[in-house]
Length: 126
Image (cartoon, rainbow, N blue to C red; front, top):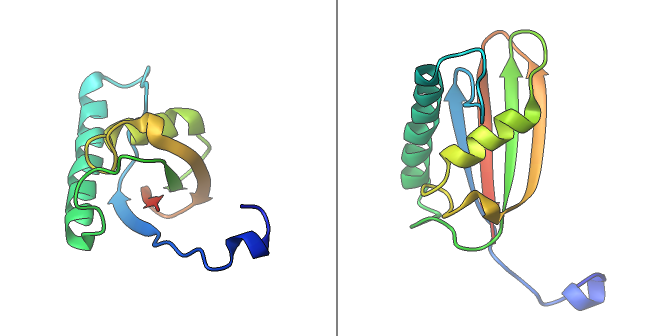
């Protein structure tokens, strides 16, 4: 559907869940840090996401179709590897928000300077 006429009368409910996490996000690959730190960062996101998805109850079980992932990373200093962070977050949300990260069809990533580390992940699906 590309025009307004074609879209008239077409209504759908967009499900959106937002997860706020304190601290650094999990990386897909961490070369300078030991695996234990990666596991802690992944566990922090998984725990926070499970709680948010349960409380917001828009997703009764992981989504089976395509979805959008939006990430805002608030950093103290510098820049980091966006692709590595996106991959780490996408992996960590498997079996919580969706079945497999291959379902992610659209990604938005923003880095912002901040007083403390933290990030927001929003998952949206029709």
